[in-house]
Picture: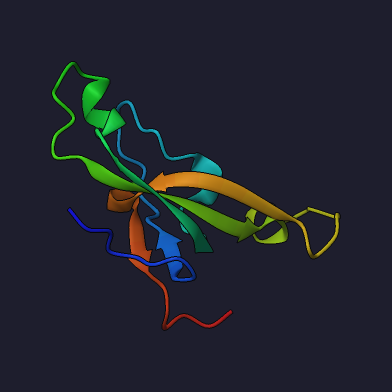
Length: 99
């Protein structure tokens, strides 16, 4: 299995709100960030939560977001970032999006 995104790729997190045992934080859904590391393939935790096998394994990425883009009223430094590990099935290519 190969990773769809490379380190440095701009990605957007799906703005989905499915019911159930979801492992993607609410505050990053619909947001755009940059892949900083590919952590490898892991069993899908959303499937494991229901006692299923978690197969096929999914690539897990470390994604960095500008913190001010995540919280509207954030008044910290514009250089602050928030890093979240996100599974590939939640990510889309954002290379064509404007900043």
